[in-house]
Image 1 (cartoon, rainbow, N blue to C red):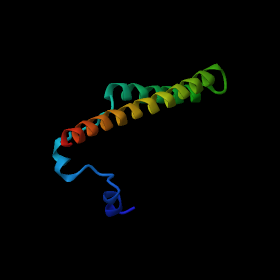
Image 2: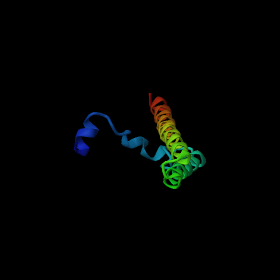
Image 3: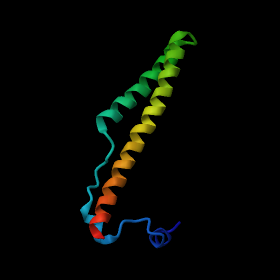
Image 4: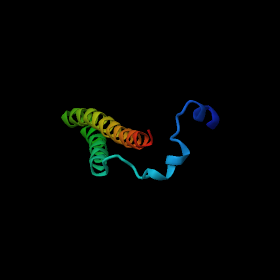
Length: 92
């Protein structure tokens, strides 16, 4: 899709509100760092395990990592959506 198509479907915030929002990430940075470390540790355990118990512990931790990464990312998106909604409510 082109910029014009997206603008036509009101995907973008109106230009008069562009300077009202902070451009920093709304994702919980410490929790995201912990999640990434968990993913790295789980991969290391799977490699070190060599098919034994550590491999399965690493695999289990990897599923925890996938869930937590999805949860943290979605929480950041929801926070950003709430912020945009507040800005748009002010305009009405």
